[in-house]
Length: 115
Image 1 (cartoon, rainbow, N blue to C red):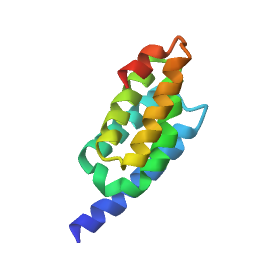
Image 2 (cartoon, rainbow, N blue to C red):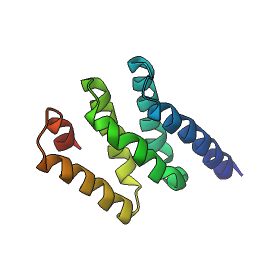
Image 3 (cartoon, rainbow, N blue to C red):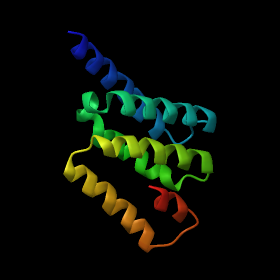
């Protein structure tokens, strides 16, 4: 029963966080808090929220090109925790995304290398 409750809570939290992170006019400080919480959830309960992984990935990958270095850094940390519990197909998608951006150098290339 406890396992089920954790899973449901984790899904709710991830759903709200991904929605918030997708909002383009979100204040940087709130974005950073959301990324910290997302990292903790993925670190501690990553396997319990595996059904949310594709949606989480969709919300995190675009943030690697954010203009704020702190957002890019925390996004890299969250993606690191996401990768630990990702299915192989999803992991391949993440690697392809990063490799595409590495082949087109930009001012955010360091964020993609860190990933």
